[in-house]
Image (tube, one colour):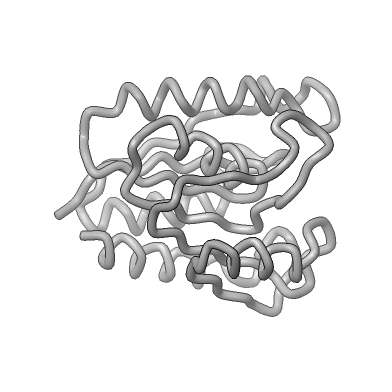
Length: 172
């Protein structure tokens, strides 16, 4: 079985970023359709960008998706908005890379639907403390893969793509 994936990039990034591109490649190889919304116009609006605007944009794309199952994936701010939208739109799963647990914005805390969720996070993340993510995942009993990397997960782009492929196969 295959469905549709919406992959959301982080701040200071774009839809053609390395992780988003790698995830899209794997999704396509597995027969899933995919899209990568561009949030760069919203990201210039303040230090964290327009988070509510990102949530609205992703929510509209997710609501418009006719191919099921729907999976939301994202890195950093893209993970944050993917998690929040999962509470508004029926999704089969979430794939979150370096998700912020709390931000100085509205909504303040990371919340997500209770759906199959896989998280990849770096032990050396300089922006989001690893133990915050461990505690959040533990409360939800999500699958969490910790890697020796920083916030960008630059040394684990292919690893993230492989984990994403395993996650999509598990859902299918």
